[in-house]
Image (tube, rainbow over all chains, first blue to last red; front, side):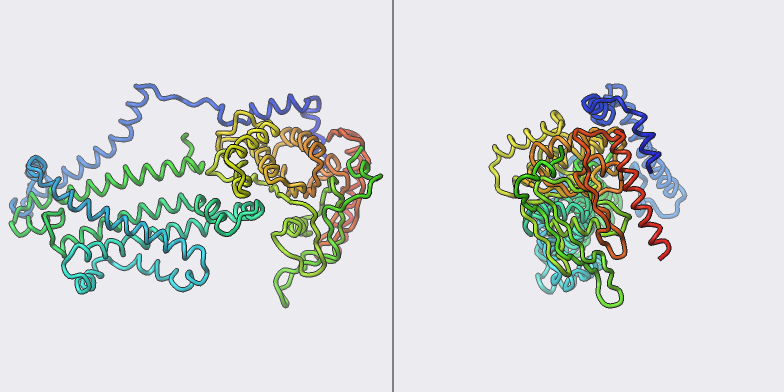
Amino acid sequence: MLELDDKIAAMAPDLSPDEALAVDSQLDDRSLAPVNRPTGRHRARKIWLAVWPKVAAVAIALGLWQLVVMSGWRPEYVLPAPATVFDRLGELIADGTVFDALRITGERALYGYGAALIIGIVLGSLVASSKIVRSAVGAMITGLQTMPSIAWFPLAILLFQLSEQAITFVVVLGAAPSIANGLITGVDHTPPLLVRVGTMMGANRWQRLRHVMLPAAMPSFVGGLKQGWAFAWRSLMAGELIVILGPSVGFLLQQYRNLADAAGLIAMMIVILVVGILVDALVFGTLDRIVRRRHGLTEER
Amino acid sequence: MSAGVAKGGDAVRAAVTLRSVTKTFGSGSDAVTALRDVQLDIAAGEFVCLIGASGCGKSTILNLVAGLDSPTGGEVVVDGRAAMMFQESALFPWLTITKNVELPMRLAGVSRAERKERAAELIRTVHLDGFGDKRPHQLSGGMRQRAALARAFAQEADILLMDEPFGALDAMTRDVLHEELDALVSDRRLTVLFVTHNVREAARLGDRIVIMSPRPGRVTAEIAVDIERPRRIDQPAVSALAAEVTDRLREEVLVHARA
């Protein structure tokens, strides 16, 4: 131990504190490290690198679909070719059907998810901050997460008839547990050292929650929001297929099946898939990136 | 002239007093005695280094003085406000350096304008000017510890509890921080309880070195450091004292190895 310290002292014996400080802050300041500012060409290349695998995957999927159609496994009026489906999708977009349906469905998603958000946050905060509430309902929340949302519909219909409320009820039950769990996990995994620091600073119980635990829980909470969205969107589609109300996305699926309009049916399925992906990537992906960057969990800056 | 000696003439006020402190964790046959009958007096303005093998209860003492834990037996009297620093800076990663320094004041209800002004001043004090808007992960280990020091000052603490605060830093950065800590502590007349494994660090910084022994944790020796300040870590007197402390610690280890 002493030999080591001698060696270290010998390495920099004549550095005055000021000099050493200057060296310290310059050598160690990571913010001064060179950052490659992307040029226009650089950026285009970066986008291309991110996009081409996705394009290739879609192309392969469409190719396989086309092959199955050409094999004659099912007649074309049951399983139409990709080109037919995309033509039909174009029609549905052009005549406004898709947007009308998305408006109704989107409104339901917003209501349901909004309610799930409030309930999830309240429930999560209660469980995270109270041992009694945790032992009472903590395990139940995880249990609810595993419950298939479609299993709630018979009860929802008994309670609310075939109504908007029945749909909202099931969407909330689908999404709220994930949101609550994200919050609970985040609070539980707050580094104990940070909690101690908060206590040392004189933070009371509420201040500890507000200034230490909730901010520390953010990355996990955003994960819960993302998962909650996936559950909400699935529950909503199930709801719209069972509680058939208004020309919503789910309603159209049923209608096209009844009319034997296979191309319309598959076109609407594509709409559902794309909306799910877009909301996930644009809303929750962005949120996730912001939070991770703030917490210093990413390399890029 | 060391702070302890400087105050020798006056009636020295005790900042921290541990009287027959015992701390036991667990109960029954699983009980572990972390501290047994520990006596420790720290005068206001004194810099005490606590050194000893791991498991000798150094951190337990810090927690007791910090009020994060209470003793099983005996008494801990603290006169003043204590702030704690750790081996990791324990800054809040989601806040900028400025906001981190402001947080204790915010919790204490200090107005926004005053917070801002005092945080800027403290950041200058620890030589982090220009880094206030960075987040902790963007700074080096040494700079993060400086920010943690500024945050401790923002708590209006007159007692600094330091748990191996420079243990994870390279020797050169540590040397610089020793100088700065020295200056800040004497400027602000702070009382410091400094836990370390590094005997040279103890001899470099302390007015007094308290040696502890494990299982159960107790104070086995106290050495006054009568070396003029400013000191340097590579100064012969510091090395000689460090060697003496090392010998004592080695004896302890051998005694325990035989036991």
